[in-house]
Image 1 (cartoon, helix red, strand yellow):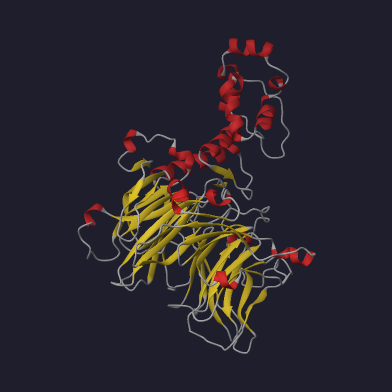
Image 2 (spheres, helix red, strand yellow; image 1 turned 30 degrees about the horizontal axis):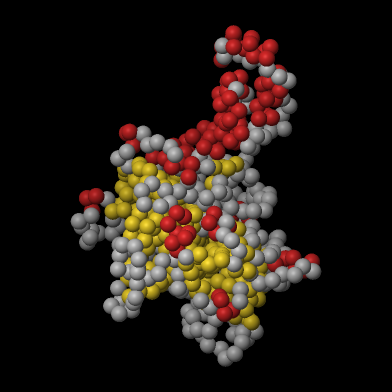
Length: 562
């Protein structure tokens, strides 16, 4: 192997005659140019800076380079990352390329066949409606509905880099907010050791909410947050408290975005830079935000909204921190609108949720040395053609019937949209989405990561037993929308549980005025094993199986590590 450790000095290596034909070598020595006359290790180092596609082309047209490629873990690692639609993780530990290549092949093979390397079962003692799952950390708050009455408990889940003797690490934040307010919701970014919490303000305050910026591991004010507690939304008019507060928080790099609905008088969507001492908060026009049902950040400069009518709005915005530098910072600008299919008469969209996990745009922070946080993975999902999950119900006001739907969207279509356009469903939806219908509602918030969507289907022997005791046995289903994988063939021995879906999905139901056809291709893998679970979640290297009792109280989680 011609592996070069970081910062090492290349040394001359004579090619091994046994690895390539001696006569071929003799011919090459007289005809190759200066570049191919360099030491093999130096050639490997230089070629590693090529774009992966160019690297593969060079190997295809030059036999000498192909022979070098076959003996280099570094070059094979770069090429196989490209083949699987993955990219190096900037925070990855500095390990040898043979080790990286081994891990990559284990990882891709495990996901290809949906066969986890390890399985861990964890009993849960807390049960709360407010929870989050990000970068290998699962957190749960006590209470049946916001405001949350009890502490937050965090679980550092096992990962692919942990050995079989992994010991669960947990910690609890008891004091969440100052006296006088009520804790409503939270979001976390373990990569930045960041915990963002939103609470209602004390009665005597002139504001409705406070946003708290804390360290995820210590619960202290975050050391990189100049303003660790920010007042948000000034009170106006007579105080009306419905007792209901719906809050959604998203984090991308240094941008925090929050959507709040007090259930009575206000819906507000705002963004701010948590690393800046600037107190300027970008706020969407109130007349527009009042109809927003949900939103998600697509990057640190763009986000997507969906309203009650089924219209998707694509917005861009300027970093709020620039306000302190004298820059003109305008409210978010709507660049395009994309319509969802029109419901039939008497049917309305209801409970629309958007889920997406964007890749950070900024240079990554220094690796956190806390033993409570997971070690960074060696690679991550590429940024091209990532998908977004949109789940919603259709509701009929006449007979109170409902139906549940899931729509997978390719996010590239939003970034490629012509500014200030309104695009009808027929002009964008069929080629950029895939539609699924469901018999029952399910929590989908954390069922997407990168290109993958995780779902569950009842085991074949349970299809006819709807009254089976809980938890029921399910097969896991992973639908991978990575365009790189659509071109790969399925081995004959795997056709019973793996399929490439390229045929259109046609939905013709009474809930919609017109027939719906979607074409976005994907690879589907169904697990051969069955698992007891109530709902499922996913990240880059894990599937989380939540087991709940009949009252939907969380009893345990199983962690499948890939």
